[in-house]
Image 1: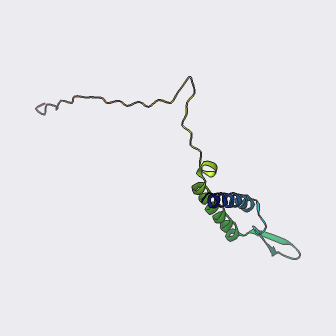
Image 2 (image 1 turned 180 degrees about the vertical axis):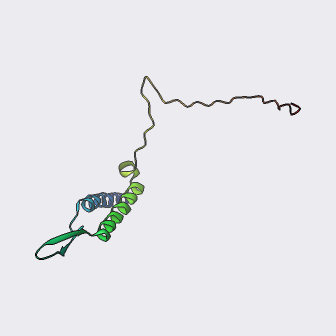
Image 3 (image 1 turned 90 degrees about the vertical axis):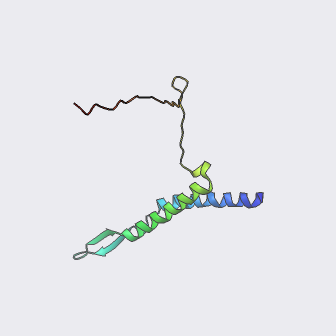
Length: 103
């Protein structure tokens, strides 16, 4: 079982490398079109950009769940020596008297 876990972790690290490649790859982000005369125009290939974003987000999400200590969101609750984190619980009793409606 230990070897399987190690192999899975190596696979996830490889997937992290793919995430970086997806983010850096812009090969098909622009489509060349013929303009007037010999002019070349370029327009954004939105479908390709969105597909790349989906692939990136799906892998990033999977990595955050599979190896949260490495690829998960870091949430730190800490203070320092001068201002440590404090949890305060307070219960307050308030006596409310009914108002006199004869008024």
